[in-house]
Image (tube, rainbow, N blue to C red):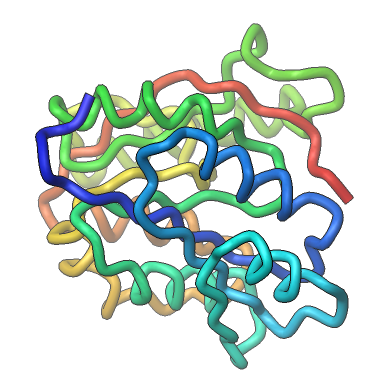
Length: 207
């Protein structure tokens, strides 16, 4: 699955995710090949940080509020060869990481696509208009910036990249709110990186 010797960091933003973060961390630990899990606590007022630390994650606090702020900090905290950015609320499946890593041999960045209804679990918040919007924005970004593969889910936040690619873009990221993912994709393409998207399962958020 991976070239020998490469290490993997799983990094995730978190804000009041005590209901789901424990299961997310445990599912990635259970894979057996994750070297580090970093949780960026974006000023939670519940037990998010305590649960994450108890399960062995390295917890850092990002004082600047906003989803994008936490994600940028997460990308800066990763120190291994391969960086995995993922949510902490249980919508993504740790088991799909193997699929994403396999495709990393074909592109600089691989992310999961949530637009395939057959892969969505009951209760997943992926309505037809979100699917249509992501398809349209993904196609536009592909055409404007010339990605090698057609993007179809520019809002997906399950992203796998080699650290040298992350290092090219992380200092240029500025969006601090929920539209961060779109900026990340555009920044990656603009840096010359190729992005490949593959279908993954997507479920309802926990909590």
